[in-house]
Length: 241
Image (tube, rainbow, N blue to C red; front, side, top):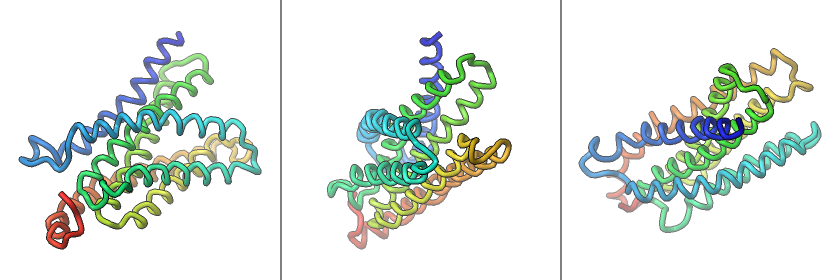
């Protein structure tokens, strides 16, 4: 049974991450455009790095969640959000990646790599805690996992976009606020001692709305605007090819 749960968790975690990466990047590479805006190998390298980082991130968050008390919960939520977004910022903000269009797309790959293993581990632990996994639990686990895919894909993509545009601090703050907002409402769903059922369901709905909006912001605004502005930024010497 454990093997089946592992495979199911892997599909739920990695499948949406890979699917979302294809959906997000397909309009910016061949055959949609004659000259791709990023190198596939580079993006997948960042995805692979993200997979490793996702294991570390989940380990810290799982430990913090299980050891948290009502007095320390807020501090842990803030601390983990700041730590994770700052780590993404540091990795993507190396001088070689600054003011380069493909940094935004590498950020998407990096974030979705983190999401793949984080979502896998989250869903796997959820299934183990439930014990008897039925269709309802699979649906619930899939929704929980997909929220983390949207969270890490969008926030890391936004940070990469900011670094590509030379506006790293503004986009970092935006990503951090998205993460903090999501984390507070997401955790309120599980804090039934503080936020009783069914009020806690509202927290989960708001958390989902935050990450859906964040991904919409990345996919429909940040990336298209970056590409449309690229020629002007090249001409001004503010972005590298």
